[in-house]
Length: 312
Ligand code: SF4
Ligand code: SF4
Image 1 (tube, rainbow, N blue to C red):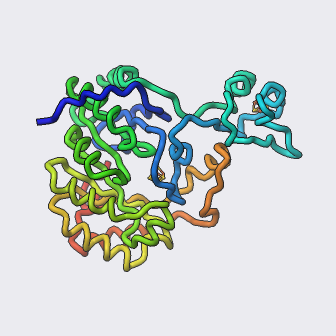
Image 2: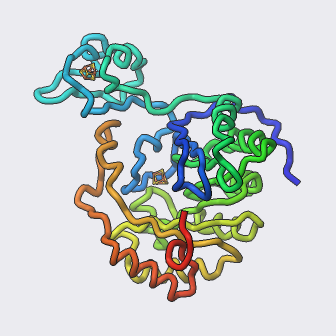
Image 3: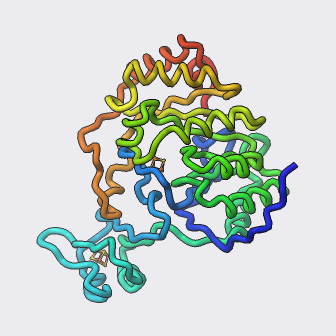
């Protein structure tokens, strides 16, 4: 029996609600991307999700260099450079005069504060499309950073019969995981690296808490799907694949292992929020290599999604 959550949370910062998603679980889903993540994965394709607070985002492609934003921007936070605009993304200012001055929509704020009721009412607008299989997936950033908000939203959506998935990096206190997970129908859980030092180097955090949380969830009745972002040269060595297969084999339950090949779709976003991509020369793995990795896991007794079965 779930306990009533009495703590009232006013709002959380949401980057986006992606509607009609077919990639974030079964059926047609609406995916909520929360802002804020305790990890800083070097390959992250959503760098705008890492900071908790809303931040300025600049879409270079839309800019016609009219300089209207430069003229009105407080504290010189946007200046004219030799070729491009120069942004002081770190300045804690009200960016709205600059955004309002831009007729090209090249300037936006990434992240918007929403109340639980606002978010739930947005999500219920899509309920007719969810059907029997679909529903809502809470993702990020890291959804578990917003524990009380998440629980309140999940309780309201559950009352309306909405299927719920939690997509998490797993980096959260054990009691947070234990409190949140029972509200969900399924959990998507990432394993990024089995070597703790490499995990720390590439993501900024240790992996012990993540692995122990995964084990704890797999002991609960909530089905857990494991997602492995396959990053060439970083976490696809035979040693790491073997360590992953050995660990997954010890779990009391999991549905499938999803191999998610590295891609470069998010690279241009780094510049748009004033960040530097730390893996500029990394290439996506070819299909052959991805298939080999999937077959390696399968030959180690792991259930791999998309190999001999359907993958969302
Ligand atoms: S856990 Fe996900 S959102 Fe967070 S930094 Fe890593 S890839 Fe980005
Ligand atoms: S107002 Fe918009 S289009 Fe004009 S320079 Fe600024 S960002 Fe570019």
